[in-house]
Image (tube, rainbow, N blue to C red):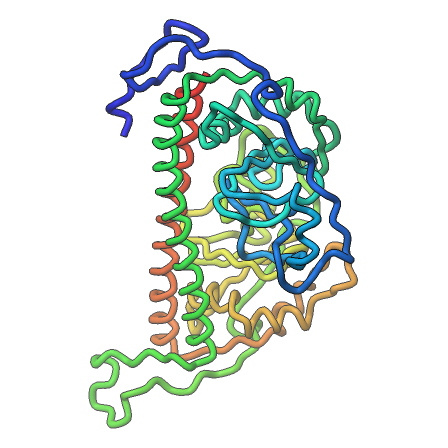
Length: 430
């Protein structure tokens, strides 16, 4: 798509990448000169209804859209008439004035969102831009996604990482540089096409995740069963089905360990050190590091191997990660390491840990009054697991792992397109 864009480095008021039919410098103005605003309304619990027109809160904001899968609150249609000032319509731009650290993707302070449809009413801690005449709102939202804008948000944000705020005065003091409307529209249309591709991939990923969840429910409730391969049933009269599943305690089919109880002294370079956040984020590249000496000492007590399972047991409990790489690392006490015996397929168990059945087992044994909540290591071994014959375990594991590969491929494509878009934003805008 970039073949029709030219590079230009001649002026600070001309973008690096530009469509060839446009020329001349962009005009500099304050955000407050191109728009007025309406602050959101502090809706109270007495306004809430079970159905009606949705109230949009900061917590409802996703990366570039309004979430559809979280708990919604509403105001009834009759009462809504008195709040028309705060009604959100398609192509409105909303900006958060209170939120988390500006580096965060969702619900960050200063975050700009383009409303895609008539969503509802604007709650407090946000504002909507009004009267942006002569400007394409899709172009303006691009401005609000550039690094330049995000750096400015960092400079004016007050508070801490979890709760920051900005003043309207400082927000509207932001310098924007814009071309004529025709060029704005060209850039906006181009970026909209990129966004559409990202949204398609996000939808595909979401559908795959829903499909996996549904299939898991059927597989682990044994509503859906695999059949033995012909080679497995040769010479058997009743070889059309696998045997019934067995119930066993996890401690009967696995060995399990916790990580080091001592917070180590971290070093700049060394051996990776895993904790809960690495398992929950499924990210094991950017970690903290420990020295070789500390690693060797811990490695004598318990060693991570390819084919093992890491499971969170403090805070966020019951998130599992099958180690499918040649691992050389240590881990913290907040994680449990599970090593399966021959009658249990590790991949199967890593999927089974996510099942409703096993999550209930963990829930029963979790210390909910602890802060953060936790499950003692010994209690993990008391959890019941459902074990089919090893061949059926393998079929289930391979089937679910194949879906995971498709989901991971979607994630990678989304990340690549998002990075590409970020790069474009820095070059298409001044």
